[in-house]
Image (cartoon, rainbow, N blue to C red; front, top):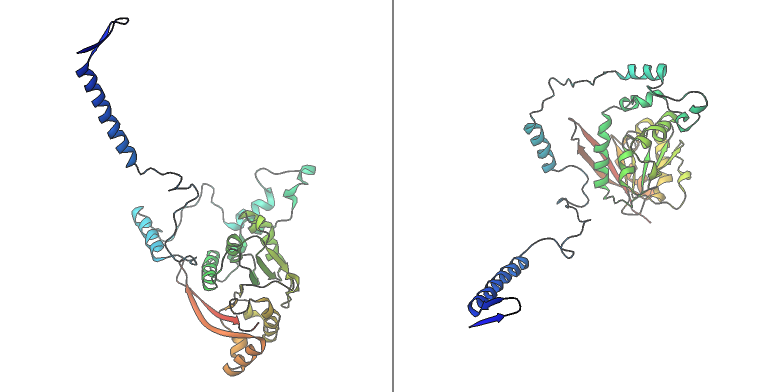
Length: 322
């Protein structure tokens, strides 16, 4: 049997027609099967803002054992060594002292002169800052500020919307990490040293791209916290090696002024190195005096550094009354 079309001269037999339809059906079956088994992402399975999540505790800020092993693997795989702790210099090696002399003598390879110099580059910035002399003004490496941040952020269970006060933030060795992590205006600091403040505002914050965070850094002394407002309450107040240089009477005055600015029960005060202002009174008298202020000593903690053979000692207090 055949179906004919005389106008076009085409003749299609029934077997050929049946065979063509069968082949088309088989092809369509396999096509649909492959589409149904496809595991390609769709709008219900994936969104662009989904990022891999770190499996560690959500409150964790410090490195994990996996992090340390990863660093070791990278050093091993890349066959790295310190070569007797001598790092190769750049194409024009200069010490900080030489860099400073160049800045004082030549200003910079390219610089403004005359009236053109009256722009934002005329803001005061001591040359010592540009060569980062202040990074050597501490009893331990500048990078150790990250260790302090990690410990305090975890110990206090900080979130980006937490509020933090540092007593004596210096040149922001630690503060930079809090400023970067916290919401804008949530980091406060009381600092007495003018050069340290200049360093913070004129060098560290601009260099780290953190001016937009608008930290409240106030020049003051004698533990006067009135500039921070009467209604602010902090999740964390800390003093790193600051109380060591204060008379005990001033430390106690500061604690008295601070206590109502610390969140009851959850807020924490951390003091590094030692608490001789307390221990010199004796355990019983110290506990009694803290209780009078509405404070309670929680205990001593230590935190290991990732960068060098060092650990920090911190003493923790909390506000136990509303």
